Length: 137
Image (cartoon, rainbow, N blue to C red; front, side, top):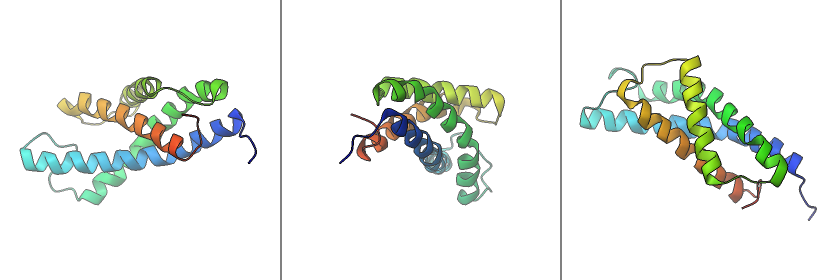
């Protein structure tokens, strides 16, 4: 099998992260919504909003932070073909914060939890990319 160049790794990592990370964000939004209904925590959307709407809105909103995260990690992939879990987490949290300022939403007291979830999603995307042999371990 031919060796994959870091440029190809970079292109695929940006494309996959831009599509898969918003999907994971939609799942997180649904989980937060379900646990919020069960435990009386503040909700991202009102209690009357269907779960499908919550997931689609979260997916659409998360496209920008996912793209910012992927582009922030791009120099690491171009240089060495990989990045650390810490780079991924920091890029995910900062991208979430920047996106929340650019496209504000009513997260209220859940904003730190959602920022943490963004970091975890970025780490999960690193695992997905390593598992798919897109980036090096």
